Image (cartoon, helix red, strand yellow):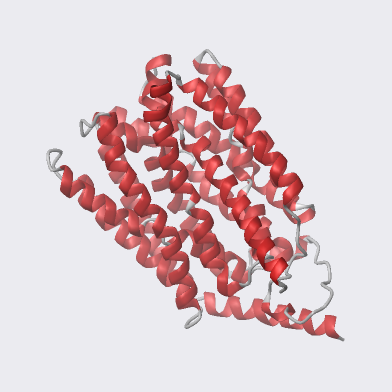
Length: 431
């Protein structure tokens, strides 16, 4: 790869990092803004949970469509469209003045939440398998950092400027529209499969196009069965913590806004580092065993469950111990995320990778879309958000641990099958 092309691919990573960062700010703002929205519309926890669940359901239903479109058409242009939709729907939700209308318009913000499979598959055509875990880890730093920036925006900047929650959404929606222009004119698509090692000395890439037989083959790979199963369980904790943890700190543990910020800021920064650590550890171990990424993921969910349990059992008065246990939880929580994405691409052919990941995300969110509503219901029933968070997270991560153990039996064979297929294609192009 020429120096110019190498610099350009990092430019693309920078643009995608900015997209993910600001998109996560917009998407996750609903967490720290939840108490204000509840107060304005006079909502119960169940009603607020329904608002968050609505956006997740819309995003879930659209994953297969977005995945198919990304595998058929120019991914960069579709990402620009997703960014434009993000901005427009956020503005619309800020205008709503009644609970039913706000619930409907907030649900519409889920349309663009299905955009990431195209982004990740395009990155896979810029970077080979040995680097992907690190790159995905870098990109996913944007998620917790976006959460932190959203928290600062909601709890410090907006009150300091005299803004209400609607004005915050106007700002983030406008940034989405600006990013749409930058992606449309600044990011080039790449031939699918170009970064696979077998094509390193191929001068002109064959165009690999989406076909239904290749898409069906994804469902035949036994590694993917367990990836799908862990995905179904694994997103429950993330959705519960994302949408309810701020309210839990304020209501169950008696934190004021400043205490919430001082507690969550270091936890989120540690969480952010966990994405890169997980991706780098997965790449390092992957070079030594094809099971490497799954092993790192298994450790992540097991230790995350243990330390979250310890944190939520800590007495309310002991804030230091609570912070320590939550910080350790934050180290382990994201370890699996970059490794799951990399594993999907380790076993699927380039022309259906967006579809494969979209199916995984569809299954992930099909169940987990109900997590905010379920947590709200358990909280309303038991009178404790802490109980809701603890039950959902520990049960879900326990299931993930079991499913990862299953994937360990099949991942070697599925990876080798893909490498053999790529080698055959490369040999055919050299003839």
